[in-house]
Image 1 (cartoon, rainbow, N blue to C red):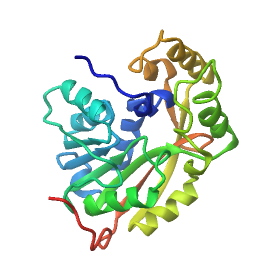
Image 2 (cartoon, one colour):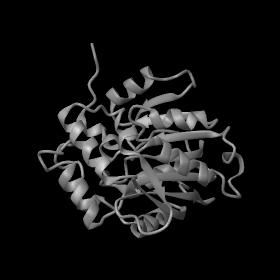
Image 3 (tube, rainbow, N blue to C red):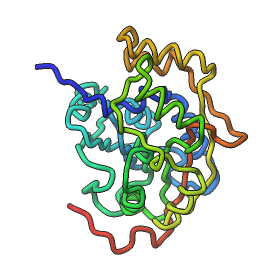
Image 4 (tube, one colour):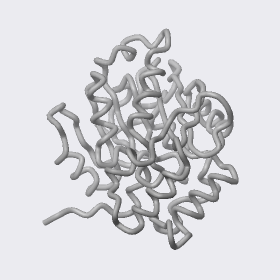
Length: 259
């Protein structure tokens, strides 16, 4: 019997988040001085919100031993089926309650999660808990601006011609500005680094791809290539952005974990 992934588990496809952009940013972060064993790969990485596993497989190709966590059993099954023999461990787990050991990972990447959770502090506390001291946290999310509201609250889930998500997946209060996330990172014991915007190379390509996805002529796998996301290192993120942080020695202290 074929599996069906609920529409709620397709945020990356909706936003056109190109895994190559995410990996490009990740390589830049890991190349910074002082990253220790994480810089050259070879450590342990956790991808939170891994969906069908594309990003997790990309992180594995960088040399990490990867655990991929997603709250959807269907998405986890599809990711496991698509595994390319790199030994990725796939688990079904919510970002707010990972159930993984303390200090087990050198790198945690949080994908397509911070813009939909009602409990960002819990997500960040869990990320800090499972990171080793000095470990690297990387995330992507959606800024709260007039443009992001138009796209995420309007085009992606309200306007009939471009709606490809169910109503309510995104809400204005769950779209978080970089300064707000920096404060939340600090509360979790994660020292925030910089943020970098990313966007479609041509906004018209995003519109065409979204309409095609709505009509069923474009698949989720085709979306990233059609949209063509690029990093925008300078300037304020109008819609989507990536960021990173480092776990301080005391981050996650006292938090429990399931074995």
